[in-house]
Length: 215
Length: 211
Image (cartoon, rainbow over all chains, first blue to last red; front, side, top):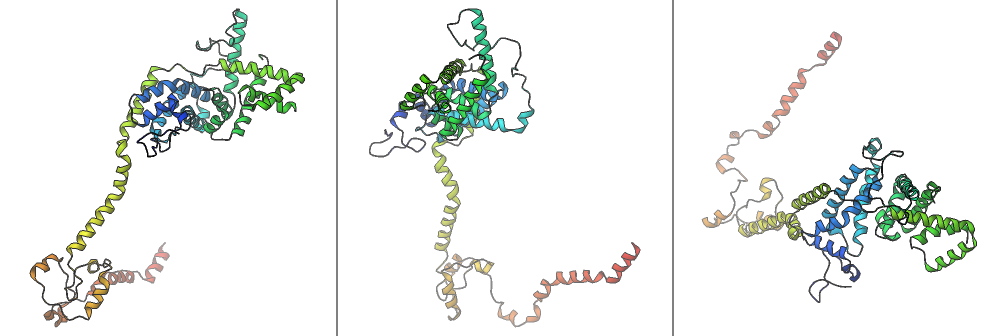
């Protein structure tokens, strides 16, 4: 364990704990410690580091572009407001995505959401090109037929992921982010590792059934 | 190993969450089982497909600016960080500190009022409030004590103005000059009583018959 502060005295982190060595080696933790210490440049850097991933995660979890932007803002405002609650013992990405997951699940639980129609949402069967940022599943595919099949599969996969129950979707997306371990996914979802295993098994099993024609 | 277990382990293996021993057992099972081998291939393809989904979105500049603006507003709304804890304690304890200081000052300025023979000090008791605890035994003792000698002027000034407990002797000799206070206190009740008397049972019966 490494302690910060005058020698001879236990030096608590700004959040009150003692910072483990492994955490100090993590640049994200350094960034967050700077935020906790009031460094004004640290928060924009943190936003640039996590913002695009949080936005994509929230977008997939909510399935609504407009709400995704609002919730992403809320996530970072919460990160700032509760910055003192972050403990360097856990990964910063886990903490940030825990906040994002909670806000998204709350949003999905809101009853009025069931009545909301988002004009930005893509519907199944909509004509049009997929977003330019979606890469082909197989970069080695060079002939148009394989490329088209790959695009179709990506589209089917996006739709299948969007149709998963919220908790399964959250578990699946979290496990794909940053190589998050089951334990971290469990922390983010506020559940047990066993429950995460079950959620992920059901999610992948569901996707496997939906995409049987492609796999 | 049963196929059901093997299929559960296949997804965990792809996520790198299976222990080496189980990886070995799974490999042995898959080698023997054609169905599980097909499933493993399919899940691996699914895993690769999931890997191609972009996990990072292009961040709109407007969203970044809006978020940082909201964070700045939140920062402005925050009290100064360093002083926050001390400040919170001060807010909580300040009234208690002021009250304690006032009490100490009062106790130091009030004369040893409770000296035997001292004049009746004005305490909370005189206004209906509780009397300070230390004075109680002394006050009880004072009732049997002889009348207090006149106090020096300076000392009297330091005491709070007193409310006379008993009327002066000349007034005490003429009780007819006093208003009967109990009567005054009950005056409202008497008026109320009269008001009740104005409504009679006959009136109520008359109203009922008219209605």
